Length: 521
Image 1 (cartoon, rainbow, N blue to C red):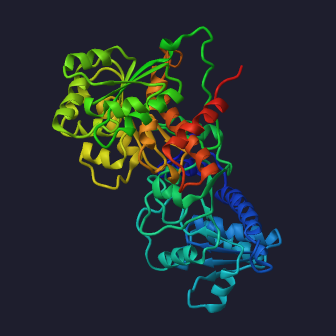
Image 2: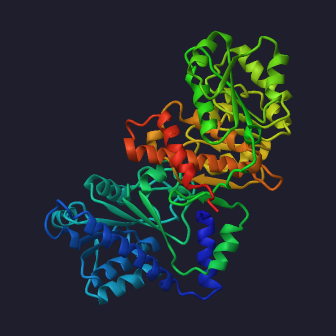
Image 3: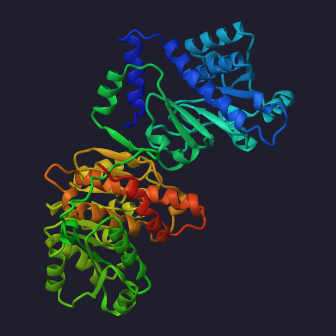
């Protein structure tokens, strides 16, 4: 599924209403119906262990804009469903949009009213505190500046109440395009978003605030959405957390050479585990032959840990290292490699001389800082897998990286490579401008070694000949590796918990993920 930016959603609304003749109140009613249904279910689910009657009580906090209109309409629909509902206006009544006022009139006709939100009103606040859930309808995709005043106070109260929240389109305070928190943001249990998911619901803090994301069809014509979003100028595809990315069956008559010869170049004193995790990631993802080249001083340690992979000490002569790398289908350069000047010179030389695909990770990326021209001169496929800190060192950008999609796309285009910008909602960008946001994985994967596993997995998919035909897409294969990696993390977290899981648990969970996502026909 493709995600829609703020600008795209505003354009869809404009065309649907102004050119296709769909009444705006009809779109609002459909949005409200989806929000009301989610709120009713959440209130029922949260009632266990709470005061009697709380499951029948929902508080709706509305802003003066059209997002607030969605909330006002949802309050009326919840009343019609038999729930006890009160709707509260946060902000200036004079700024209410015409559609919000129309929905207030319908609420009044149904016996409800839109009350002012006042933290000093003890009766109202006590009533809200006893609700089964709250509806956040303060701001939708139009928010572009930090929350202040009554809105900031309302968000702080919702978060402090610890009540489950259904967010209407976006959790208020989240930038819909970047996932950045604008001062403060609602932490929702469920977000009901309209027409398409928004990038900000999948990235960084925005993903953490969104909870479970449900996409509701509110009646914008599918052909319009496809033309303006799915086939628009800058399409961004969400690889869903609950879908499947199917790999073809492996050819029955193939031999190990057909599944890729992978070289892992890494390791240093104190960091012997990194290249071995990358090697195991490559093997688990289907690589046929994996070699691990490490500095001579740590070779005995690496060799003792290798069973399926083949460890060897790096030769002293550069020509021998280059020959070894040229004999492989894909080279992974960087896991645990260290930042000694001699090592960084080796990385840069290999990037200049190697004619084959390279996965550049960790210290391999660091070695490029100040030498990006070497990447620009490469003609073979190259993928970089930085976290934000490595990306900032490479590009000189400020931290945090606010617009992860834009930054990744711009870098991949400028340097004709694939970029995997790791983090919550890992972004994979292709040289032609396409972008994928990953919907799998979670905070349990935020441990040293997880990225090493991913680097090996990308190399494995790039090295298998049946996956790399003339019609294949290496950037998409990298995005798929990210998705499988995250899915394995989700499986490990479900079994072991986010605190206890380890990168080796990703390796243990990966076979089940790949088995479920392999074509059986």
